[in-house]
Image (cartoon, rainbow, N blue to C red):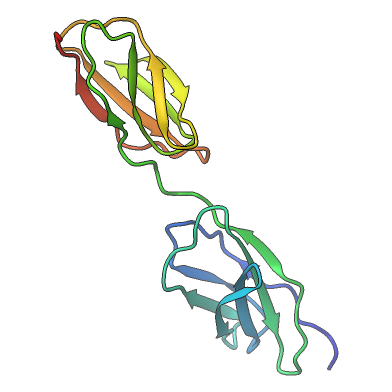
Amino acid sequence: DKTPPAMPTVSNVSNKDKKITGTAESGSKVTVKAGKKTVKTTTATKAGKFTITLKSAQKAGTILYVTATDKAGNVSKARKVKVADKIPPSVPKVNKVTIKSTSVKGKAEANSTVYVKAGKKVIGSTKANNKGNFTVKIKKQKAGTVLQVYAKDKAGNIGKPAKVKVQKR
């Protein structure tokens, strides 16, 4: 037998998943690699199904390669799977805002877009730098106004907001 198995099918994988599932040739050895490093191997069932349990979820953006090797040692073409980002940014840390403030400063997930809302209205937004620092320009707000500051990552995940009350001084 010199015929390699068909390329495995693999379900979507996110940075929240500790399991990778899919189908491969019945009884074949399924290998998951991140680059050249083998992450885990398992054997497909008679029905061709497999589940690989990981010690920890993979980082978003990681490229996984999944192959099937039959009993004769023939290796399938690799199925390339990109680990999706499903984890929202954490709550931004926000500096004090006063009635004289014309900006909201703080720290959020690096390279995320930071939004400032007063009530239901977005009053400003900016992109955090690669260290997560941000400065959102806003108009001066009344004392007691509650601003909600939240981050949205490149994958579209929206984090919980920081709530900041505008101070008199």
